[in-house]
Length: 151
Image 1 (tube, rainbow, N blue to C red):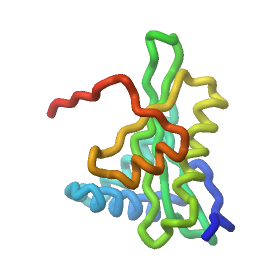
Image 2: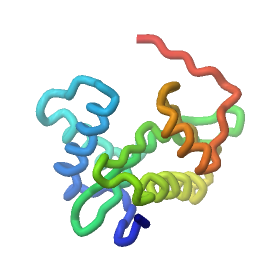
Image 3: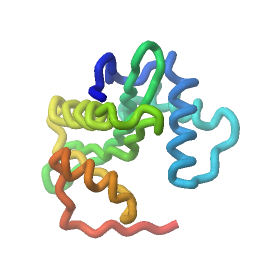
Image 4: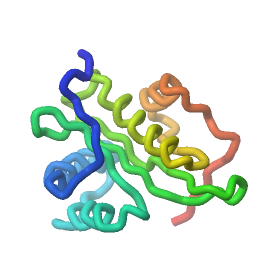
């Protein structure tokens, strides 16, 4: 089914309750513990109040949110420009197959290009083959860089 009637836009204060619910679904998808009550809402409000640290896009149809994407900012010393990290891209299970993920991805990419950022990066789990196929379809290329992390 095409993405008819889907509007992708920047998140607004009115979105906080629905966006928090979508973010809970995202955390459950990745089998992460849910935060204490109010923490997600506080986080969303923080991004709204501090757009220099990041922003969120939402996919909306008839007043209902069905997906979101989050961009955070960093810098590229090699290009002397700001860069973006698409840290989250999520579409609710009952809304998949409607090209909402594509619309959210394109909104992030358009924002990065419009603001002349050096690049946009993102990560996905090694075993998330459907996400990898999606990112390949969107024109993404595996990086030459190896990602490390420490807790």
